[in-house]
Length: 300
Ligand code: FDA
Image 1 (cartoon, protein in one colour):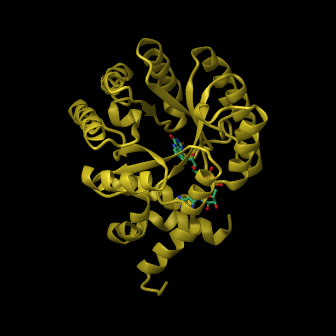
Image 2 (cartoon, rainbow, N blue to C red; image 1 turned 90 degrees about the vertical axis):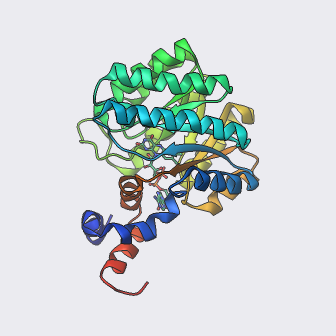
């Protein structure tokens, strides 16, 4: 990443919210459930599946966490009524992890119970490294008690291949991604190629070990590596899926679907769109530059 890219990325928090909103719209389905439903319908017409995320960051008030639980539970009613090909993704800190891991466990469990009633599924997103142990423990408990739940592993973490070894006996459902948080060198690989290689290594360990994997990336090299691996292992298309974020590289979505693979798109919606959008913009300095130019009153 160039010095200018770094400058742009560090400057993002100074940009007025409405300007970030204009460019960030591409990553968020909208503010309401109706917006999310409309987006999922469009994706289904393309041949994709979805996972819906109610936007929100860490909460410190148990009541607020409970209100997110209610939103997720009623989201399953909407998914059923509208016959959407969608499950949900949840963030542990939104459901009370920072208040008390036991509270978070109960909240996620309530959502998973509702998912199970519709034979659906809940993906527990992975946040920064301070949450990894608690998140994996919550996953492990609910997977054993109910099923209908999966978790995320991040290829940038040194520990990921070990975590896979520990999880494989559970017959786990894992979304594998590179990881998006800024982690210290002591625990995370920093070089682009090393993260890629750890992704491929982890993916092979998961697939060969019988896990169901959501291969979550827009990196075309890794998409290719994923396709090559499922071919080499002779896996049928029901034992894995590719996953992408809403708003990123629709052409790659089509390439994956046209090759006969299943693809799920992560569809975030809700009023708390700002922190999510800033994370997405940080990943893409080209888009972030458009935001900065808009702020400075410069043309596109
Ligand atoms: P990479 O960053 O190398 O990007 C590959 C290509 O895609 C590049 O050309 C890049 O420009 C383009 N691209 C990537 N992001 C873009 C963006 N925002 N806008 C435009 N272009 C973009 N992380 C995490 O820590 N915990 C989690 O739970 C999840 N969950 C999750 C779900 C799903 C479905 C996906 C796809 C990703 C996540 N992530 C995540 C995020 C993930 O860790 C990672 O940060 C991003 O996917 C970017 O990494 P890539 O593998 O796409 O490669």
